[in-house]
Structure formats: C-alpha cells, structure tokens
Image (cartoon, rainbow, N blue to C red):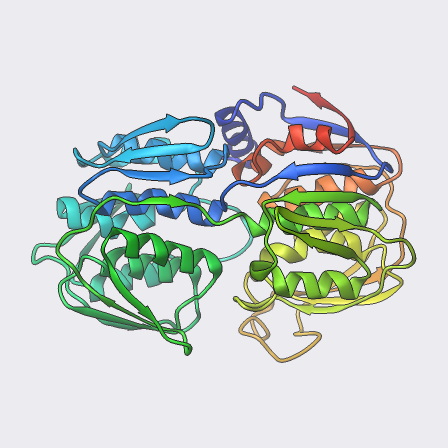
Length: 455
C-alpha cells in the first residue's frame, strides 16, 4: 500500500505539480474569477463508459486532474486509444480492447478505486476482468462487497486471489433485480455500467440519483441504452446487444464550485465561479445564504462573496442527493469557525470524514467531535463508535500552523484555513489536492493569494 506522501507525490507529478508543500501567508481576501471544467465524479466514469461502445467517443470539458490521468492509463493498458483534441477534449477509441495483468493495472491505478467500475464493461467486451487492491481517500469504509455481489447477481464468477480479484462471465451477463441498502453512488454506477449490455431487464432499487449519475445516464442513453428513472429511486435498464460511442460535454464540478464558495466566505473574499449552475447547487446555496454568504446567479456562472457583517451558525446534516453533500461540509466547516455561535455538522455518508478538523484545532478553532448523532435523526453510524458529529463554536481567529493534507476535500479545506489564518502556514502533501482540483495553484494566483511553492 502506498504511503500518503507517495500518493500525494504521484498525484501531483501526474499533472506537472513538482512541489510537495505550499507556504501561505494568510489573511488576504481571495478576489477574482476562476473557471470550472467537468466534474471529477462524472468525467472518470464517462471515460470508463467508453469501453461499452463499438465506436469512438468524444468527451468534452475534461479537467486536467490526476484522477483523469489514472483512468486514461487504465484505459490504455486495456487497449483503448486515448487522444487529446484541444485543451479539454478526449477521443476514446475502444476498437482494440484487451486484457491486462494485475501488476500493470495496479501500477496505473495507484490508490484509485476506479478499477472496480471497469468490471462490467470488460466482462461484456472480454469475458474477464481483474481488480487490484483498491485505495482512495482515507475518509471511511468503502467496501467493494456490494460491487462484487451486484456483479454476481448479473452472473459473474468472482475468484479472490492473493494479488487481487479475477472475474469471469462464462455464461454472459444477465439482467437482475438489485436493491441497495444505501443509495451508494459507486454501487449505482456499477449496476448502470453492467446492466446496459446485460441480457434482459435490470431493476435497481434504492439507487443514487446525484446529478453526476443522471449525466452518466444521459451518456449511456446517447450510446443506445434504454434507461428509465422513477421518482422513488428505482432505475430500470433494458439491456441491448450493442452500444455506440458518444459525444458529450461533462456536467460542471459542483464540488469544486462549493469549495471556492467556502473559500470566498472564509477569507472575506469575492469569487466568480465560471461554469457553475444554480440547479445542481440549490441545497448548497440555501445553506450558504443561511450562514451569511451572498451569491449572484449569472448566465455564465455564480458569484460568491462575503457581504460584510457577522456570519451565522447553522445545523447541517450531510446526505445523498438532494441533501447537503458530504463533499461540501469540509470546506464550509472552515467558514463556520468564523460564525458567531454554535454550529453542528452531522456526517451521515462517511464515518471518518472529520479527521481534517485536527489541523483546524491546531490553528485555533474550537471544534469538538462526538460519536452521537447530533442535529437531527439517528443515522447508520450512530451505534458504531465513530466520531461523525462536529460542534463548531465561533467566532475564532485562525492562526498559522504546519498541516498535512489527509485527503482530497480535507486538503482543500486546509488550504482555505491557511488562506484565512493570521501568519504563514505550511501545507504538505498538496499533490493529493490535484486529484480533483484542476490547476488549483494557478487559480490561487489568479485570486491574489500570497504563497510560495516548496519542493
């Protein structure tokens, strides 16, 4: 298993980021405009979907992030020709799909968990698939058991081996009835990518319906899939024998948009996020306004700014869409340290997502973690001894400190904290942030941040 430092260095190097640390002189408002590309959580899955087509696909608005580089490498070792057209468009030609060995897959995958989603498409194309040990951000349990169980329901044979897992489909894949105990995004993606070419009809109950899921469904429909979505989280897929390539512009990255919005609020700044749209961010915008932030919706993006005055405490419970996304709470927690009063954040999606708050406490924040479900109804972590509720007491002025990035969203939150703190903070392992934030160093420069990159 790679260390956190190795993960960070590999992620940063893949997009040309040679520095491992950044020293930030905080206390300066972020002001200016940045532009969004396609969502990390859609683009990487859309790239995998290209395996299902018999003809090339064209994917537009692709961000230059390390997770895209990982998927590109995995596609190429499986025989897919991936070429760039212009600054942000990929052509994906799956004409010559082939098998790859565990070691080669593992070398390209690194700590990414994306290889599990290759299984359905590769079983359709080749009759077999391989999965190395899976990594990813260390924010909680992301078991692959539900992925494997779903694949078994389609008729896959799972063979666990020392170096990973081998899957075969000796009798092909057939439609199935599947019900998820929790509306997992990954499990929903797995079923969609497998069911579209399985023989017969698949019914998925308890599905995730995030905007990125719906955009993946749009892509699959463009390819020739027959998919219907009911209002009660039921998705029905009628399998087809053949799919064609697609042409698609990816949905904008709403997680990145929320992160820059939180940065504007925490630094008393004013940031225009080009490409952001209101409809996919309704829940976030409501909370942002309750905290005391201001925004303006324009045709080409959303302006987020601190209007002056005191920030207000809030009670937040993360949830699956259309609830408040778990990826939104970490950046916003930094801003909540400046709110006057007691805020509560109840995390119901990942059980270990508050590890990033240790650094905030070192910087002067008053944050207490609790095992109990605070702020609302009990959740699935309430009896499992996890610190999944946070109480933030403010306002507090953050001071400089040396911090280490623990995961993607936590890492960006540490950047926000350093930008809003008094003094010079050094943030290490910044390469991890490159997994999901395109050109974040250049964007910080454009917004007037005062920092120095260190090797």
